[in-house]
Image (tube, rainbow, N blue to C red; front, side):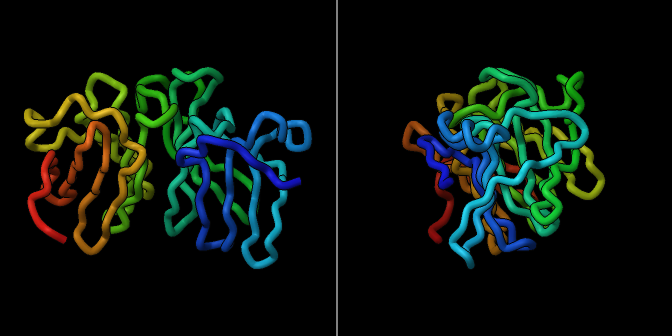
Length: 216
C-alpha cells in the first residue's frame, strides 16, 4: 500500500506539528485501495497510511495536479480546486494532520467564485508562507493579471489582492509560479520561472523586480 505517481507539483508537505508528511493525489491506480486519494507518511516508522479525512466548509478535488500545500506553524495550508477538471475555482483550507480534518480558511464555499478567482492547476500556480506576517501568498501565471498576488491572512482569514510596485515592468511572458519560495532572513519571495527569469518580490515594500538586484 505504498502510493506512487508522476508530476507531484506541490501536492505534498511535511507538517512540523505532527511530524508527518501528507501527499494528495496519488496515481489513479492507487484509488482502488485509497478512494479518498490522500496519503500520510511517518518518517520515523517509514510507513505510509491512508486515513479518511474530513473536509469542512465545502469539498475539494484531492488530486496531485491541483492540490497545493505549504507548511505553517498551525498546520498545512492547502490550496485546492473545488471541483473536477482543470479550471475550477479554488479555496484554502488548513490541514490538521493529527485529527485528519481540513478546516476552512477562505473561499471554501462551493458558491464562492470571486475570492480566489483562478485555478490551482499545474505549473502556473504557486503558494508560499510569509512567516513574518502570518499569511499565505497565492499566485497564478496562467491568468491575465499574473502580476497580482492574493495574500491570505491566516489569523483574520481576510484576503488582500496585492498589486506590487513596478508591476508595469512585470515580464508578462512568465509561465511558472510553482517555485515561489519565501526567504525569512531576507523577507523576500524568490520565483524561478520560465522563460529563464528570476522574479523577486520584496514583501515589506510590496515591490517586484524581474532582475537580480543583489548577490546572495
